[in-house]
Image (cartoon, rainbow, N blue to C red; front, side):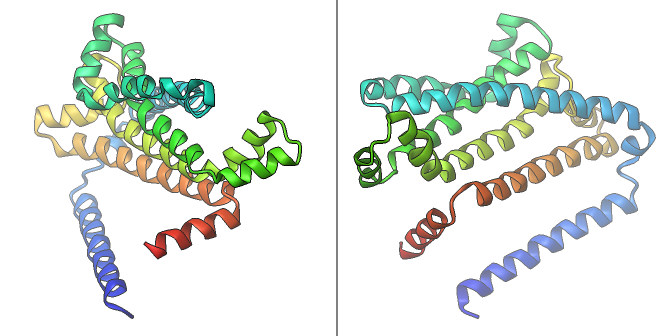
Length: 250
């Protein structure tokens, strides 16, 4: 085992040691008492949390991917700076400020939370879609054109499959960030698991804090792993091997 692999193993062991110690402390001190004593309330908060994430992320996907495709077409490339810089505002402005601005337009409630998180999710998907499509080898597109494929066929059969790795990575990043940031929706009356997290902070009560924060963390980790799996199956094997070889060569 070389030095790099040994360091990686040591880091993993330390990481798992911290995780096991944390959950031992949580269970031995009954820190999930709110979750076990109020399961209906927990399911209601979890349902609202997922609702905000699903709607805001779906809207971001429906906007950012078509926009990213459009920005890589010859006639629209000149507008890329405008779209990217506009989407960049959602990441540059602090998430709390976005929530406050959305609340100014839509008032207190779930609508403001969805709008704020939609804006917050745009940039990773848009940037990765543009980067993925730009990384497609022009020779592959020329060959497809020479075979008589239409622009639409080249997009769906050549460009999107070859850019899938980058696009899914952007989606994964956006949704995982979204799951964590949705906890802030509580501050503008949006509900979600942030209700227990902020109640725990205000009351200095770890049972509320842990019962809210741990499910949010586990949800983010689970979604991240599911998208990694999706990434593995959707990206053609040849492209995965070529990209891995390129990374190892750096």
